[in-house]
View (cartoon, rainbow, N blue to C red):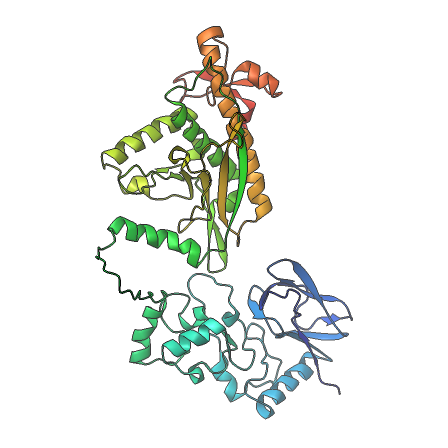
Length: 482
């Protein structure tokens, strides 16, 4: 009787050492044919099916929903489950205690006993937060350490023997998924338990200099800011996309009024909030291999006018009118200048906007806040020629583990069109208000003529926020966000 055939995880993507076993297409005991798909496997770039190399009966080794190293045994194909169980038992008892075992997720065949050595390879219990981790799968043979895990092991004076029969060991396995504790099955001592928590943050680099200097402690606000923003460098897979927004030349007859800046800022918040409902990958965060999507759209708006960086939050910004956002932004600025911003007004942000247009900054590299997946930067106007049209840049930095460049570009280009409609509509509304008293959108102030030019129309809606107890006109562009 031939030995069962081991089906191993293929190396489809050169950059991947681990893959996710997304789902099984067969179950234990199923009879399959050659080339029949067995499981769907997800790499960092694509999802593919693993075919059976021969016909026979399937015995799975790795549970679905877990990660496994490339080259590890995915399943066995044999004449029967009993034959596969006997083969695994013989390899465990006669070859090495590190030989592949029957998956803990599936019951063993009748009459099959687990070898005593297998008791030491039970994976640790999962943490409270579900984590797709290779260490959570069934034992898969000789212990191997990632490069970072080996460096941490040496730094803490731990022994590789303490992690025998663990399969692939990574940093999160040594640190208990970041909680500063060793996994339950790993032997610990008082010394190692005390030493492990200090290994979580990277060691500070000691600067050696002979130049005379003075020392000051970082302000508490800057230490807190560093804690929030260092997350995007340490944990997120950060990427950024930029689009240029042409700005229509100002009409000398209708100069920008004093409220232009706050109306522009409110328009960016207004449209971003509504687009985040359409693009939820920028209104969430990633943790332990899982994406957490926020139920609210709470837009933080960075302020820095000489009193330190503060980020007050427009809670439920997607449900507020333009006029309400203008008023709230004005109040935020007053509270900032009088040091009256409350902790409640600075918390619960799900997305952030930072605007350096007033500082003469054309482009910059915004950092994502902890607990978020994206941040929008707004740059200053610039012109490539002295008399040419001006434009400004919108920069979206995002966590590439969740989003991608194409989605970011779609978000920015749609935001660009919406904000341009606000800018043109505001100028047209000023003319209409002073000359024609023409009907216009109560949200973005675009005139009826401009709406018609964009092949849209004005709709009368009940809106107590704009006209208490009455109704108002809203253009089709703004209606898309309602």
